[in-house]
Length: 311
Image: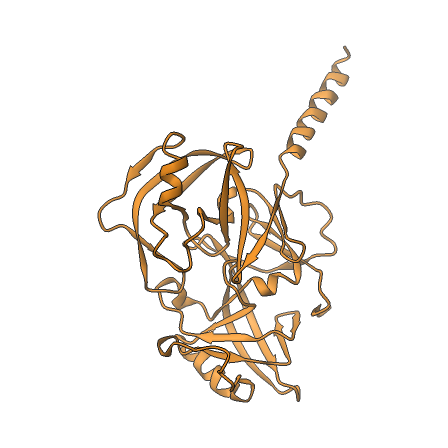
């Protein structure tokens, strides 16, 4: 056979193998959090909470003991080792650590994970795994509106996408966006806040602002006219200083967001102190989002008439 033909056949085969690695998986929104059903070793169904601003893979101890003991090496965790939800003080005791390879969604990857009893945690119970998407080491497309995700997304024509000028937080394995945040009332009078906002798929609202920071507290006070006064619909806990802002529009750099509220509260924990706020999944619901972790890029393609891009 002609040498050139052999070469082209090999290239075509390689291309097909690469294309075959793309996996489309379902998404689910429950109580404001984002879930997907994955498979371990092509057989074990795994209920996964997706994260983009959390430093560790966390596996439910009950699930790990039932399905993983014969697949990966689980080592006893050092005494006193624990992990906390982002923005809280409450800590979960870690029982095991896993540093091993695992076949996840048909692809073998290395995982650096901890195992904890999630049954006592209101936020983490009834799930098998909390998973930072960066640990997939692939480009990921998230479409919350149409309820799917693609792992191994090809970065092809991105001309219709807005590229966010994000920065990478190594400790949280997440992206943050340096933001100029303007909120407008019904008379188009605005208040402004500048700072770093963590991009967090695990956050159930569009925008959170962190009242642990002085500039945020001043921002909330100046925005008093936009506060939700009727608190009959929720019972805020005094220690979080929760307030809800109801602006007409929210401008996030070059993005205009309409008819979304903002949640102001105290975000405890060392890592949260440096962030003015969080951009959560109700914001991402209005876009098809591509996370390019290899090059530290995020791309947005609008799929809602409740958001506009300033050209």
